[in-house]
Image 1 (spheres, rainbow, N blue to C red):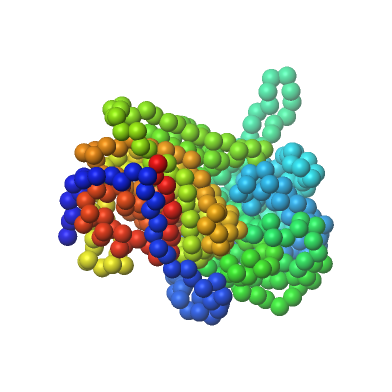
Image 2 (cartoon, rainbow, N blue to C red):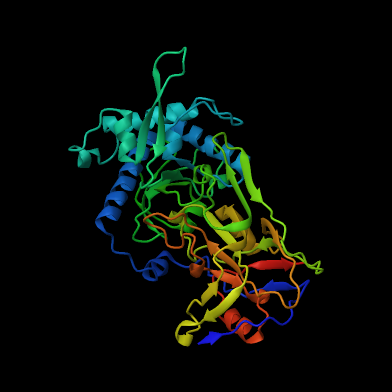
Length: 439
């Protein structure tokens, strides 16, 4: 059934709040496992999981043999998070492109020493279960980098100097491997607490088994790692990065067509970089009210973004208009199929720490600033919809990518037709509740 979207009157200065059900944070691990059937992996996915697991063994060997380097790693993540506000990870591209860095409290050569220790551990086989890989020997850094989809580019030296240098770039079709340290701010970087190491199983993004260690690097009984465990124990996770980077904009390309956009990223020295464009309405109207996309509140942590999906990233898109809305099978649990102009009037992208989501669960005063504004709208102008969705950069594991049809919820208050608005409201996700401000 299709609903025409005739425009009646937009309600200015309104506050739109979708009700949401809050999942019980104390839900047992057994219940969580039972509710999440495991995915069957193809050959490429199995190969990737094997690489995740091997990297987790290498990291265990490295941290067990060098507890001080683990503390330095924690200090690096803490300093990086303090500067960027969201980054709690170390990508393999960063590891292989190790350079001197400037971060408060971090030795400038940390990345270089960490890379050499990681690669040295990998090549030497001084890590648990290394015998499993005895037929897959490596002799140099370039081979290890290539194993993790990092290709080596040889740069000729500049005129007047001698020698060459190597630059390591992620393969366009490869997996962007990374070490993720969720809830890192819960743990003082120099603490002597024990820790766990796990990896993304790809069969689910909510849980996996992990190896636990005491502060000195001695092996303890295995644990089950999920979001609650990582919140309560220092946990390192080998996974992949599905968020945007500056490299995605190197050719001037936007991940989605939009006239107005705001994207906040970080450069190689972990400085905040804002990519923003604001285009004036070509047909200005006398209506002065504007929609400011300012507040977003998410009430469930484990709905659509499990711990192994790493940090949480959201896209916010505002359409130019709506042509029709289809409700599949009239099932209240179905997502609406919304026909819109695929070029957004405005688009924003934000990264959110898991600790931030938990604070938003507990306090109405916590919010995320999207930082975009669009408008104005007058009676008689086209209906619009606002889409809030988990952004996954397109790759072989992406579920949401840049597809608006996989929205988590939408601001339906921008739809003038009351019947359409009511129907869409009933389909709003129970896992995500945005708080949008109109002014």
